Image 1 (cartoon, each protein chain N blue to C red):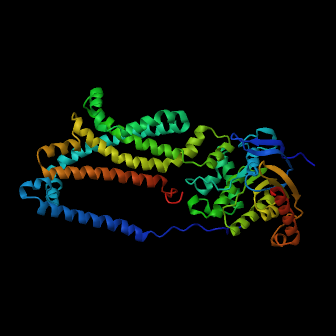
Image 2: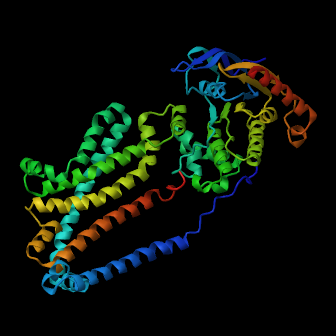
Image 3: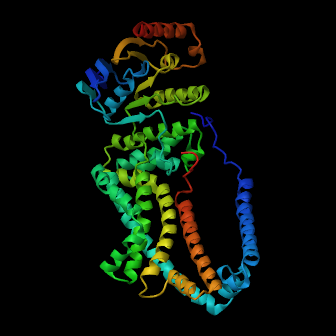
Length: 245
Length: 275
């Protein structure tokens, strides 16, 4: 097995008010994995993403990330409302001082991948919630991420839009071959998206279970409604309930 | 990937509301002028009618007599120049102050009480001080305008600079952007709608300030405030009302111009009802 891309080694996170967000978390993420971090609110799953991206530093233990090309998608699209779609997608290229040509190439590619080329001159207020999230995805893609962090990205959207966007993310994963970490509190979503589901418990936040997902790369309705899918979801559910009891 | 998720949000039809925003103020204006005529003719005896001359008398005397109109327009121009200069200075000072406050909490904590004090001190109370310090000239009139119009620019700009969400700032933190980048690419654009709100309020205040200053600082070219005072002393009702109407129009135009500028600069993206 190759060296892990992300390692959390005995990671502890205590906030200034004394809340223990993470206690002794050990996770190793291999290149090419798509991890779903699943757990109730307050289990520190978003904190793990913040640590991996460098937005925060753990109070104990080691966090190691083997790349600086990180994509991060927040729960909200977090677009700059005064910028057009194209300028929003170009933000990180701009902050990295990439050349105009390089920026154009990356932005064109990212807009194409999320299917928003025709909307490049629109402003965020002219877009639907789902389209805004896809702009947010495209913006992260401009980093050419080797590690892609998703912090409950589509939680605010309706079920239908959310499923389509999840398929989009799956498509991106297969195409761009990044390593994904996807925070969610939905069991079916975790199973559908991930190659491995890591279940976390709250107070303090810790890892309480791990499940390899046996389905292959092509996942559609056939997988979503298969008995194996239901069985795995049920197992994970039992694991979560055991921790909460 | 498909392009099918969602479609552009269509704009609301606004025609009916827009026609109402034209009809209602006009109807009110007509009613107001009617009331004016009634008061002037029914309540005032002819010997006291100079207190409220009838609208058409004001129109003919002050606006349709070229000599009289010029006597009003010159001072109006002077007042406009003073108001604009003062407002420009207040804008620069206000934006710089707000930016400094947004960059360091201690600057905000230190200066904000004085900004509030500036707003609360009656401008008339410090006029003698201004006269004492820098005299009765042009500069003093501009200073009054600056003092009266500064506060809304500071508070609104500061509010705008601080209106960005933590997540928006984190986008920049992810790339280790420095303060200048965050200020120019995030905070300042985000502050523009609020800045224009402040400018619109301050533009009206600036006109008030320049008229008030005219009453006290009489050196140099007369402004519309001085003209108002003169006609008041002469009991020249028609010209007095003419001057007051022009001064009010100046305030309206200032308010309107900055509203228009605001729409021009941020109208393409800013939706006050859906932030």
